[in-house]
Amino acid sequence: MARSTSRPYSETPGATNGGTPLRTFLRTADGVRIDSVYDPGNAVRGIPREPSRDPVFVVAHGFTGSADRPHVRRAARAFARYGAVVTFSFRGHGASGGRSTVGDREVLDLAAAVAWARERGHARVVTVGFSMGGSVVLRHAALGDAGADAVVSVSAPARWFYRGTAPMRRLHWLVTRPSGRLVGRYGLRTRIHRRLGAPPARRAWGRDPVPLSPVEAVPRIAPTPLLIVHGDSDAYFPLDHPRMLAAAAGEHGELWIEPGMGHAENAAPEGLLHRIGDWAVARAG
Image: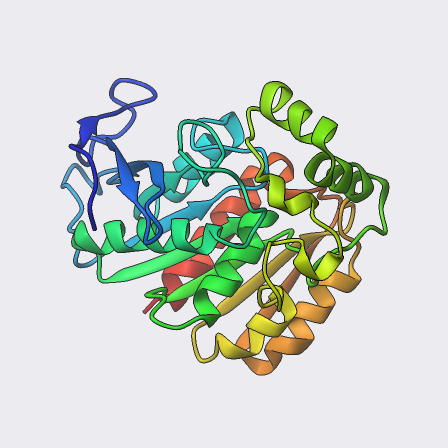
């Protein structure tokens, strides 16, 4: 996997004592540069972790997020208690190149991050995605050669083109209208591909048929362990979305409905992040 020279990175000097975090740009299969951070995690009893024994958590953020957003860094710190962590900015987000396709080509971004984690020597990879990132980890795990040993999808939609809530109607305006894409670029630091505004809906990604939907992807993930997490106060996607995903997963999936939780990484409480870490370590085998 082609990439630029890695450089030291630490959000807080001394924040990790299991090794020096690194930051680099990965190159995806379609040539996009993806800003990525590798944190080897905390040492255990003062002894640096061994990549071959510990899992690595590859964290996929939500739409308009990035590797540097505070809630993504908070999740990374929580997962660093259980193993190494790779965070990255999807295309069109943060310092990454390209333009956002809102869950389509982003599978290639995640694949590059997972491959980098493997290159660092980790035998076990856990992908954890939030909202848009939650749909990406599902599709990534379903499309073959994924390399994930466990998958966690938090606050993900079950189906495309959902407009049943006010936040999702605003998001559709942001993505499909030229004025919305300007707001995304200059107000939210998210560069959105203009082809997403092309009617009809089946050409929303610039191709027909549209990408595999999350609920269609889920049955293809088995036997890889799958955890679906959703808040019962999610303002974007009501509970029929996680229930559809869980039903599609059958006995190979597990569903957690979190009381009082809102949407994605911004709303995920610290305790939930640690429960996810415990679940992943137990099942990434």
